[in-house]
Image (cartoon, rainbow, N blue to C red):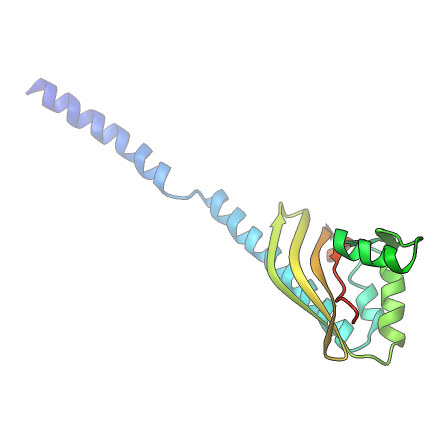
Length: 175
């Protein structure tokens, strides 16, 4: 009988530990909620980016970036690079630009731009983030470029801002 009582006491003593191990702590729940809020805020930045392009609003587009950020890299895929070299021996595989140049293009072009994003994956710790996705960049209703894109973002005092954009580039083969 004494052994049964000791077993029961041990089980009762271990029960709170077992329950605690299976129940998320308040900190874990808060962290998950914060993580979800950050992902939602980053998705909102992506929607604002798209809306600014559709509206030809270079000012709104520029406002999504850190003011001094200027890393904008367009990297041709191997096959696109071979095609570009066939046209010009001086073709560059990696082209450096800036969000200011893109905002200027968006503001001044008469063409209709419509970027499509799919397979979006966001990683964040609440301070920095990376968004990785596939894209098709449509110009006047036709696919003008496609590839994968990654944004590096930071959570500034006034919210999430894009620090850099790097994308692979596979323009359609010109017939």
